[in-house]
Image 1 (cartoon, protein in one colour):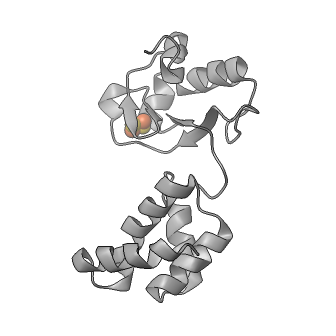
Image 2 (cartoon, protein in one colour):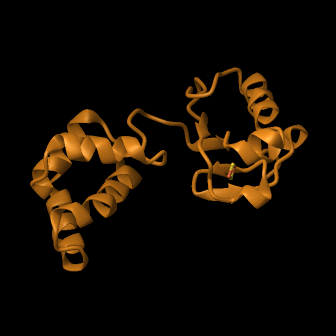
Length: 154
Ligand code: FES
């Protein structure tokens, strides 16, 4: 446990005084620093907030934006919900897998990209939709998959 995490808990508790309500902001803050949430980190969070570790683990598992293993610099979530599936999400994922040489759920050996599936990202009108780190992008037709990789970005 890093010493300054206790300070973060104090700060967060000003806004969210009860253990459960402080959980999400604390997980976000720690992940922003660490890049992911290890089992040891989740146990530390449980201790800090006086919550059962199973509660912390289940919350971290429920939300797809919490990573329980190391991820790449750019995490590409491709929505595979019904609307996106009907608009070519499978083909989009396949193009990304081919280009990056990894399967969904994996990270490129250079640590630049992780590729993941997501359930409905709640932007069905933009299908097929993807989320790159925290940025929504859509519609992204399969042939435009390189937009998700930031290639050509300044
Ligand atoms: S099904 Fe993809 S955003 Fe809803």
